[in-house]
Every structure is written in structure tokens, then in C-alpha cells.
Image 1 (cartoon, rainbow, N blue to C red):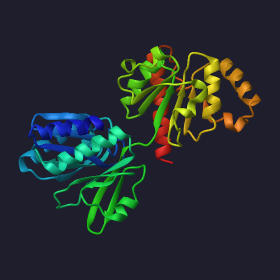
Image 2 (image 1 turned 90 degrees about the vertical axis):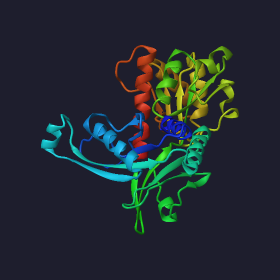
Image 3 (image 1 turned 180 degrees about the horizontal axis):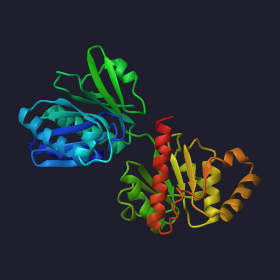
Image 4 (image 1 turned 45 degrees about the vertical axis):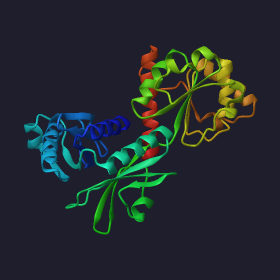
Length: 339
């Protein structure tokens, strides 16, 4: 999503009109659910996707119409069995897609995109709100948990109803589509080895914010992790002197040895971290858990630790292990958001 708004800001500064295409509701087995977005200019799609295939192709055509007419609109796609076959698709369902016209150089949208990119830089939990009321020109707003409301004026009852899931909110005669823009929570990765180097880009690609922590200076250089939000040289015995772990955060422990893993786990178990994952074999886990029990941790405490980390896809290489960990964190985040 960040890349989409960076692309929007660039298009507006280059005096290009744009259309923000958003799936605001879907049912059945459609390619993408609510929240899928795509940005289109006169040059065609420049960022994002709503799932590909015939729906995306038709949406690209409709976006060009919106650009010519300079007017936002909602389109409803009802995909029944015959239509699915005619379109060459393997999935059906209904899709509501909103086409938000954004005029070139518009100062309001330029300001809003700058504010959104600032929220990304700060990692502030925030929501994107679109006015999709029929007959309205539409408009966008963003609400930051700390920064408050920016852009379009939004009723207080809509703001109070913001949550983790995409929603349609009615207030008076107006209808709004609301979705979380920036997820709360950081992935703290302890250890800057080969797996971490593969893991950071994989997690960043699916909108996780990553911080790498190492006690070896050579392994926490920013050049090794250009997509990480931060790299930190730390003392493994004093983790909480360097970071404050919150209940939305994820912990990935993959240091150079069992001793350091154990020391870090003992400290992290005293934090409210949402997820704690540790790389290692069953034999290693048994030995570490025995040490932690001797330190006073209970079986209930240890049940918070996921080890071996990652989904069981028989991963072997650092790149494969990174995929398995990323998949598991996507799963954990989705379960948390839909709890």
C-alpha cells in the first residue's frame, strides 16, 4: 500500500490525473477481497492490483472512462456461473468496486499523500476512509491513532467504529468505506545472519515493519538490511534497554547460538509480545525449555513460544525458511485481525 501512495504522489506532482480503484465489498470466491487497490493514470495501471483477470481488465477500461469524465463512480460486478465461464475465470462471486477520481496537482490530495507517507515513516497505526456515497464526488481521509483526522471531514460515529477489518459505515445519508492503512506492531528480528537477510525483504513485501537486532557489529549494518526500519547493535543480556516490546509486536529469534537464544527468550517472555518464534530443532528446544523452567518459567509461559518457527513446508534454504516464517506471520496477523 505504501508503494501505491508513493506512486500517487509522484503522479500528482507530474500533473497526471489518477483513479484509485478499490474493492469495497466482495462475496464468493472472487480473486481479491475488500481492500484490494489499484492506481491507474492515462498511462494505465502504475501500482497495485485487484486480483488480475477479467475483473481487473474491465476495471482498467472503466478507469479510463472515469479519467475522461473526471467523475468518481461505483461499479457492481455480479459473477454468476455462466458469466464466470464466459470470462474464463475459475472463481465467482459479487464484487463492488469504487473508482475514485483524483485530479492532477490537487493540493488536498498532495497534502494527504504526504501525510500518509509520513504516517508510514512513523509507523503510526492508522485507517484510510473513502466517501463512497452515491452521487457524491467522493473523497479520502486518513485517521491516525495519534495524529487524528486528516483530509475529508468524517463523522465522529464513523471514526469511533474503526477496527481491524475493512467495513462499510453508514452515517446519515453518507456511506464510507474504512480499512486499516498501517498495522500496529513491529517484527523484532534477533540475529542478522543469512535467514534474517532473506526474511526482511519477504516480510517487508507484505507490509510488516522490521527491526534487526545484533550484538555483532558486522551483522547489523544497514547495508545488509536496506528494507529494515532500523538495525540496532545491542547487548543480548539487556534487550529491554534498547527496545520496548508491546502487545502488537512480533519476535523472531535466530541468533548465532543456543545460549543467546535462551537469554533473549527469558527476557521476551516477560513482555506482552503477541508472537514469539524461535528457530531450532526439537532437541534444541527441549534443552532451552529445561533451562527456562529452572529459571522459574511455567509450561504456560513456554506455550507462548512457537518453535520451530515457520509453517511446515519442509523449507531448507534461507530463502525457503524466510518464506515459511513470513507465511506464518501472515497467518498470525490475519487471525489477530479477525478475532
